[in-house]
Image 1: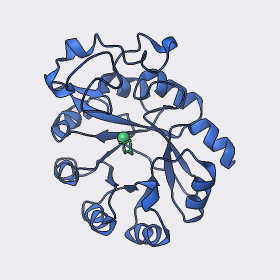
Image 2 (image 1 turned 60 degrees about the vertical axis):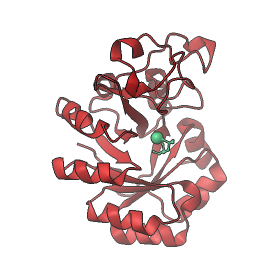
Image 3 (image 1 turned 45 degrees about the horizontal axis):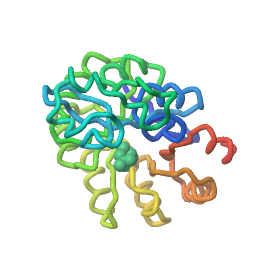
Length: 242
Ligand code: G3P
Ligand code: MG
């Protein structure tokens, strides 16, 4: 199960892994995030044509792999042939597109994961997969609040995080509270004292994204955020002296 930050501990989530220094959403970026001292790793999930949860941010393959087309239109055996590292830097050539199962296997009970589900169809497949990894510490988040509501109905104990990128955050927060969410994840520019107060009042942890800048992160820490998502967990932690 997911164990959130206890007490006063501040939570550094590596956004797509240590994605400033390694290709996002690859095991190379996840290993580096752990080495840099991240408290947990955020990753994005899409589903293959044959129903296998894959770790990739975009709906399409072009930006972060040498493939073309939509993840949802591509079979696992073809996704496995792709290079998800070379676009970032030559030394990462050959880095594969990870299956979610491989990342769960790697993380075990050691590294908490925030699985961000990008596709409505991923919900059931991810739940089925998680049954095989009861040792993993997983927080499931999405911008799609219907997906989260469905997950809550099927998995009453699963920790959920509600993502929000709209000024209508009060509505999103009400939905999060109604679903018994663990946390609320607004885009960083939406966070101010009234949002921080409301999230605290709702009894949820407040994690915000994406913060690579130490002065801005320090200002939000003063408002009482419980953690943040960053592309550079090691450097930011040093700069903030947390
Ligand atoms: O989960 C926080 C953040 O990752 C949401 O936006 O586009 O980076 O997946 P995005
Ligand atoms: Mg994400």
